[in-house]
Length: 356
Image (cartoon, rainbow, N blue to C red):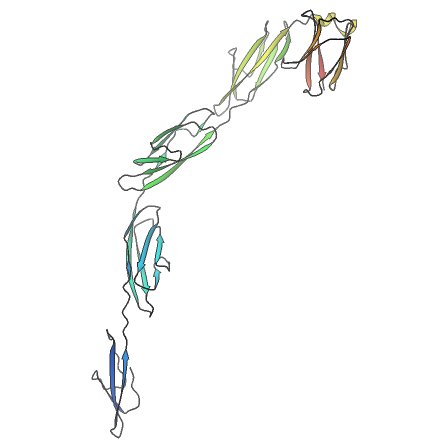
């Protein structure tokens, strides 16, 4: 505090200088008397108001599990500045190790105080899922085994450490494992891949003349097992009666699919008797785009014509009402079709037509 206007000065603090320095702890009034060169005296009074520092505190000590968020709340001031950079009264913190945080609180006149608080971090359990395998085939069972904690909660609702599941599509499972000692949780996930069932097809089935042999070739898998016992991709057989073959195919993932194929045995001796050459059985055009005509030199009410596709499936059964009968395969697949002429429940002619 500096006095002006006189030659010498006397303060109520006993100081005799124009300027004095003081550090009051409470509001204080200062008086100074000044004497001129002629000995005349004047005085002045001033005061220093001492504002109290804010008392800043942090309301709670915090213990959290690793990965959780701690909340520290400061009070006692107007504004705050935390050691982690937060500028609000409440700081949200997520330390990975034990950490001490401090806050400076400032009141409305600029006075400040500091407080500090520790956040203790408890390690979470190391939770793992060990299912042994990571993929299954449709309809297969999968064992999920969680370890590393004391209690468990799965995303499908189970609360045991083991779960048996049978997903129909690739599925991701998660489990929260909790330590009963610390109450801290952790999460583990496991994806179970559902491999597709192979789609098996067979080439070579259909209608076979008696005494002939057929080659059946499987497709769609990695390895095959036939109902005949063969494990080859293709088998050759010459059945004497209608026979159904089953083949199971296994993919590289170990999934199994199967299918069946038929060989239908027919007596084909009528081919030479009723060929185009003797004009008793005329079929045209062949090959065809779909429409073709069968002309019989004679017919009766007991005559019918059956058409089979290459897999032996009967696709048409027509009673003959005249010498000439028209057929249309436009909506059917391209390939070879077998035609039987039947009279009085006996096959009198067999031939083939090719649809392009």
